[in-house]
Picture: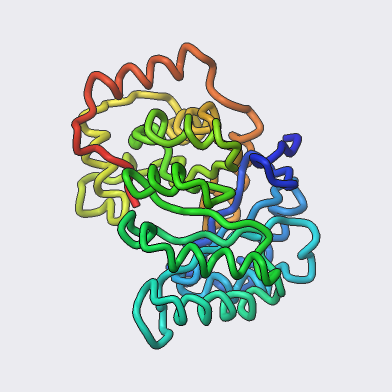
Length: 292
């Protein structure tokens, strides 16, 4: 995959990025993390996405690939205390959280610093946006972005303060395709798709087993997609949207290799995308908004 320009930034990103929530929350062994992230870089992936609240994922990334820092773009998120004193979104806590992330990641600057699921009301107050802008001005982040969905993401895109948007986009979560992606494209923002394979929610026998993907499991019961390879259909549908990079998590070596192979196939064809979009429009309920 040839890297392509990320909005109006100077970054050229791979179509597939590595999401690291699973590495932290699943307690993946450092040795596996090191092998997996290095293999990802060796195979052309150049975006690593993490967050302050993904358990110890930032530390694991720092340990695994900080020596290759010039070879990839490092994205992280902030907003939650995650062990720090203070309250979520409190400006002083936020500043300390950003500094902590840099220490954990073993770098003096991240390529993209994102406000993590911040509410529209909090964004409107302006303090958290100013903290992010100050971090950029101080050289702690090259660009700033917003990670979130629905009305909150719509405000973040419309306000014009951010270089990038990260939002849920998959065949069970299509609100952004009309709500935010067209505006983000018009404004020249870099766009990151999170949850592009819908947490593989269809693999579970019932909603209780689906965990974080429970809402997608419920939606898929009504959408009733029937593809020979659901992961391939899901990822390639997301790649067909107005995004620049799809962030896919993995905690096993074989899963990363499978996702990478699918990404190399490129987006679904127009007819398949149209079919999935038509099914969504016929079935989706008004409350099927973007999932945080």
